[in-house]
Image (cartoon, rainbow, N blue to C red):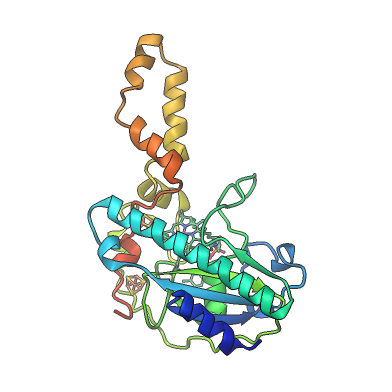
Length: 255
Ligand code: B12
Ligand code: SF4
Ligand code: SF4
């Protein structure tokens, strides 16, 4: 099976871009070795999906979030299909990796690092370069793009790297970040981003339950009507939330 057959299948599935990276060209210091996932890994197939701009740019947080949930489900299903396609056609092993979650939540990782860094995978597969927002800018679709990847045992060569400078250093991502998470160049302050982009995440839940545990029975009754409880309840079944898309929505690169 050659790259062209895989590329065609990916585009037929609905991926907007696809690239290949030899496992040796994937460098991500903070994430585990790829062999811990697939011992015989030789290459990564990386697919990219343009995001829906109207949803990401909307002031209605549910629009962006609904679009992201749909996009993740679509991308995850395609990733699974691609892994099946490769295994069936080639009789080699393939391992699809999650577009975001599940993450390793055990200490010391605690959800901070994925098993495969999809930004570094996309970079190695020639699908883009890092911008000031520490995300990958794709030459065709800019910053509003998400990635998935499949580890394979196929000896595929890396696609040519993107050589162009795509970030013009305009600073719009930094200035528009509601959490001030991008102030330091080359680093996203994770806690600041999380506070702004996932307001009903685990930290809020812990604060709520701390308050609940220390309260009198009457205060506990009142806390059951606290306006924060319903969004926390909703977050339980929706899963991780995305309430902020500013750093990608304001980026003019490749638009
Ligand atoms: C955990 C996670 C987060 C966490 C923590 C981020 C973190 N520590 O990296 C939080 C919740 C903060 C987060 C936020 C966001 N995320 Co997020 N996140 C992830 C996830 C699941 C794992 C990331 C990871 O392992 N990071 C750890 C390692 C890779 O980071 P690192 O080694 O420290 O490298 C960093 C720096 O060293 C620096 N860096 C490294 N090399 C270079 C080179 C240059 C030249 C520069 C400038 C910087 C640079 O950039 C890296 C990222 O900060 C990935 C999916 C995945 N599996 O990769 C999505 C992912 C990175 N997220 C994504 C997105 C879109 C977002 C958000 C916009 C939220 C949203 N609404 O979607 C924000 C953007 C924040 C930002 N501007 O950085 C996309 C990015 C797509 C893209 N175009 O690049 C990914 C790839 C998901 C996907 N399937 O596409 N995320
Ligand atoms: S997702 Fe929002 S809070 Fe997080 S870095 Fe981007 S702009 Fe800042
Ligand atoms: S908003 Fe401007 S500074 Fe930020 S990544 Fe895009 S082009 Fe670069």
